Length: 112
Image 1 (cartoon, rainbow, N blue to C red):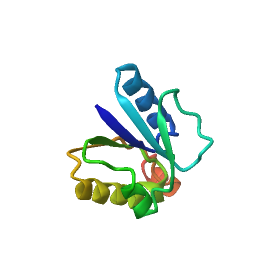
Image 2 (image 1 turned 180 degrees about the vertical axis):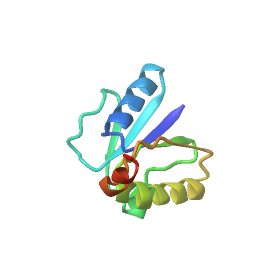
Image 3 (image 1 turned 180 degrees about the horizontal axis):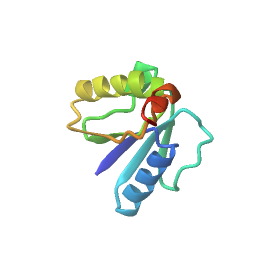
Image 4 (image 1 turned 120 degrees about the vertical axis):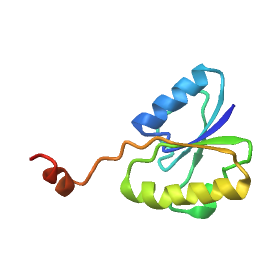
C-alpha cells in the first residue's frame, strides 16, 4: 500500500510511518519542518497544510491518506485541504487519527 502522511513529524505520525514501513508499505510524508526526524525510507515533501495547492500536489488516487495533524489551525483548515485534495484526486482511503487536546479553558470545565 502507498501512504501519504500529513503530520508525519509529530509523535503519532512518526509512529504510524515507522509501523507502515516495517510492514513493507511505501510511505511519503508531508511535513512543515524540513529538518524533521523521520524513519529512514520515508519520502519527504516539505510544505504547509494551510496551502491547498501544496497539499493537492502530493495527493494521488493510489494513496491511502493519513492525517495525524494536531495543531488547531492545521487540523481544522489543513484537514479540509487534505479532504478536498483526496476527493479531487480520486483517492479512496483517508484515515484520520486525531489526538488534539482541548483548550485549557475547556479543560477547566471538566475538572469538577
